[in-house]
Image (cartoon, rainbow, N blue to C red; front, side, top):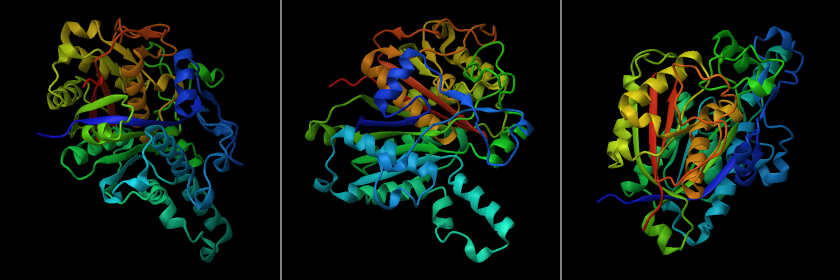
Length: 418
């Protein structure tokens, strides 16, 4: 029989607050973290079709980190380090008392070290001096730099993996951490997701893809509007989320506080299109169904869905089709929210931050509101979506995350019971 896996620590770095306490308070109050982009160095902002993002303002690494981690890692890895540090502290784990080879690190990242990457390539072409490229350029920009530096910072010598499946990266990281513990590869896993890609090139690329919101440049807080009739694309965000996953026997042995149980996971590929989901929603519904089956949970038992809900015209409608396909009439009774309405789409961090929201919802019975759901799109309208906090005892929560490259992930969380 596979081990039960629980969440014993949480961490968050978001546009609405650094630290889980600040994040959750702002989320329940319905605050928006979307703001106008100040500048991209000497690039004129009026050349960008979209000019808003979920930015983390006034982040000072030295306030949260010490030693070489302050200056020698990219912004996305700094976010990951801060979130992981908080989650470990929250868990009460004393790593020095543990077998370090039984502690894993699994991180989801969509883009990697883009801040340093863009800076160095720009300087190289301007200076024409390849001998002046930063000596830590390669280890800093690699996608596994965050997982590596987290493991080194805390002495975790178990499985050290990076999952990169675009927007579903850290949902897959949670799922792979679940598998690692279930199969006995680790007793606990530091699980995280991070991205910091509000950079001139990446932002320009998403603008060229015509994926971003452009109609709310003068009212940034209105730009991210999942399920609303006037949604016109997603809003880029940045940040990190972290969860400490632990085998139940290990957590009970050290009398850890338990937020929730991670009960099931599914990963599928639509094998359809690099960017657009299948419009009938069947593959998304299949992913959710497989995750529920893995958790030994029936669709009729699900109380809450933290939706992928990026605020794109096609994506939101497809997800609702999938929910109706799987849950049938129960889709009208499930509570649903979209964390991205407040913080934007944090790419590789999205699944982890959605997981934090699921754990807190199970722990507190509170579902944070969905912002800007002012004029529900008939193709997306479900009674469980609300602009207000919803309070109800929740037993089963489902996290959805879908990524470019036809990647789908779903994770099932349960309220912890002995």
